[in-house]
Image 1 (cartoon, rainbow, N blue to C red):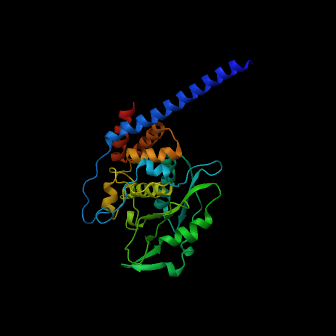
Image 2: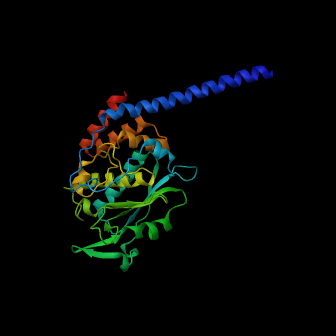
Image 3: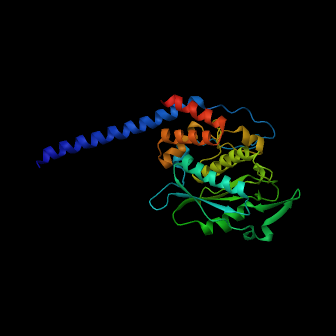
Length: 295
């Protein structure tokens, strides 16, 4: 081939590649700009709420991009769930549904490992608080999960039916996650006061989905959200968790998508279908409102 002609064809190829890349970036940017109009502004925090006495820094998209974080790579792109404890039939069903949900929410393969028994918790990391046994959350991350993280695991989240505490001066926590090593744990205990029934199944399931996706979001480097009502908002208690949406705000979705590179519309449709199937009606409405803006 004549060299001049080769250079001309090469320039056309790179020009078309640039146009394609620019159009994809513009399309994604338009998605986040569009759904931003459905973000609900945060109100001033009340004395009992997470943000009231915490001076957390606003994580911008640029700040997120500059931070060190976990992202999928060849041979390491699966979310694993590690149940720990003695689960009844309804709790096992919730763990299964959580796995289905996280597969949609993060658009990554999600697998559930065989359950570990409660005997894995030594006596010195247990305590009794208000006549209830609790487990030290940090031990679960550092001494149980990190040692059992599969080689192809992007992140590993433990799910326990035991209550958790982070340190002696705290009453409890719903979950805990590490930004660096890609492990975390969520407790189901307080979502139903330790007793899942058919009557409270959906409410406690919704809480599990929110807290679980929140903790995995931390594993992917997303800080507590100060932008809008969002699944990544910090939470002190169940009423605060219930008030927060399962929906990630436009900014947190943009952060997540920049690392995981999924099809936003496909994800949104799949989330809507999941919410419809399991009668999580408020989240159905929110997904529908977002879909209206991108059609």
